[in-house]
Length: 107
Length: 107
DNA sequence: TTGACATCTCGCGACCTGACGATATATTTA
DNA sequence: TAAATATATCGTCAGGTCGCGAGATGTCAA
Image 1 (cartoon, protein in one colour):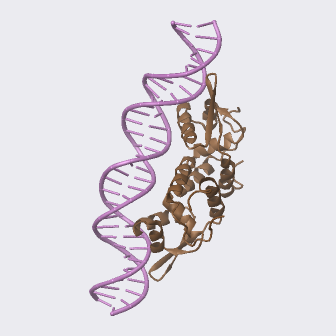
Image 2 (spheres, chains in turn purple, green, orange, blue; image 1 turned 60 degrees about the horizontal axis):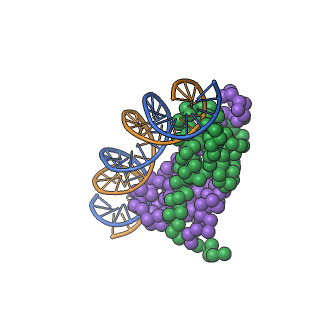
Image 3 (cartoon, chains in turn blue, red, yellow, cyan; image 1 turned 135 degrees about the horizontal axis):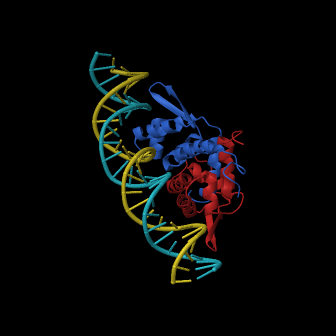
């Protein structure tokens, strides 16, 4: 076991910190549901809130959190705001998660 | 193969909750580091703590959290306890995370 | 046994998160 | 203009997390 002066793995501790930040954003059942939904198309805040079974202001807060992480993007159309996936890697990451945690389960 | 063409996928909300729990366990820079390290072999608590630059009792807490999620396993050898990866999907998941967040960085 | 070592557990304080109600802003329609 | 609709923001608070020190537990060797 080498010393702390980085023999083995590089010092990506700050990069790992960033990754951890984004994983925290994903680590919520409602937000995972939002990812699943938005991977199939774009939806308004109201539609997303109804699908997730939560209040619209709460949905708005979750969506903006995901937007801050770069996962989602939004565009206004009249009084409505449509959210959609902005991060292409989300599909791969979600596939990994589903492959591990949702295999065969549920319907 | 069950139906897959579902506009609004059904309620696997509890499965998503479980996935979120495990993602929370991953969503910490030190624990991500531990995953990277243990994907290369098995190490004692002391070795892991030194690699991560944290106190041993703190390392022990992080390791046991990962163990509770089924990611790691441990076996005692004398006074030492070796931890190693117990969840094969961890490699794929970590590859996804690194592909998104650690591309080109570090080294 | 005693003592050193390796790991684990507990309790505390600081900080963060999630959900909620109330309110604010933006847009369309009457 | 006012009112209705759609979304966003704010304040609050219960509950959770993180890191730490102190001490407990387990193991080996003399």
